[in-house]
Image 1 (tube, rainbow, N blue to C red):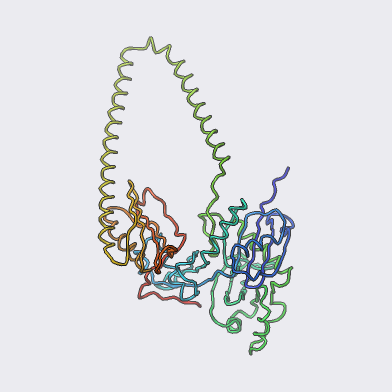
Image 2 (cartoon, helix red, strand yellow):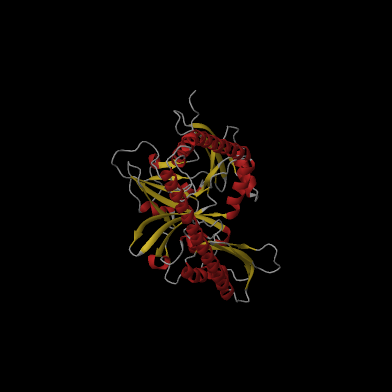
Length: 463
């Protein structure tokens, strides 16, 4: 029997419209079902996602959430200001830089980014921000339903042409999603360039290619009135793609499903996407794997016993000289093992010494009336610090200074998390940071960005 094609379930959530599309990209008829509705007038984020999911009773596939509550921005940051910044702290820095552009507070958002081609001495980032509450609610909801959440992204910026592409011809599409206007440019190969604009839509259209198409997101009934009142007027009808049209919306959903079907954790994405981590094995699968490994180990032991039994008989009449040579080789192996053990003990003592230096560095850098360290844990190759502060910038400053101290013993900063304290009578922030040996610990992505003091020579733009 043929395998069932991989299914993608898209949940589109805008300011007024919600929609669910179930797509099988590899099928001859990829769009299995499309259902639409009005966004419920509630503040409960989980209820909005759940209502969108309940629009259809189709068997779901991997769930992707496309919501306009996320924001996008284009940042240009001088390369020299990022050279000394650890990779683990880059999400925090980008969230802080985006705050004045998107209006989303850095402490209450999660970010994803794609680095674009550099501009002179600047590194250029295309950044997507989403409220942390959205991300947390989505993960809880689909974990409870035992469904796989692929990730979350803004619906703008589809990196493909809608319709049949003409070979070798460059195309351009202007997308209007409420306050977000984005220009996508590409060719028949599918290579796309992106530009996020803060200018009025009419101005963007005047500067666009004459054959550029205009895509209007669902629920934007005022766009036509706004453009008609300007000097430029509306583009020709054949160049306007309205997603209020179910047929247009279905084709748009299929195009996005084809793109998202190739996205996996740890791989580069064509647009900034918040990708969910792989779901851990269920308890039954873990037990089955443990049993299989035990059976393999038992089989290997039985095979070794059989081989040893068959080799024992001829060994009784073996040459004494050969036996002595074997004993000498075994003795040399034991001596080598003892030397290796002594080397390992010396390395362990060295790591303990590094841990002591790390604890003294924390004590010296937190001698501040605004910051209290509540817990310090030092393992063989890792330092964990937790505390509370009334200064939102203090954890970021502590992380950067501590990174400079620990580099002398071969450790680097790996993770920093900051969130508002719910138990304090005054405005305070709980924080935790992790540092350690980069050779024995993989980089950890920040799940909730912390505020990083912006550099004086940073330059942010929104073309």
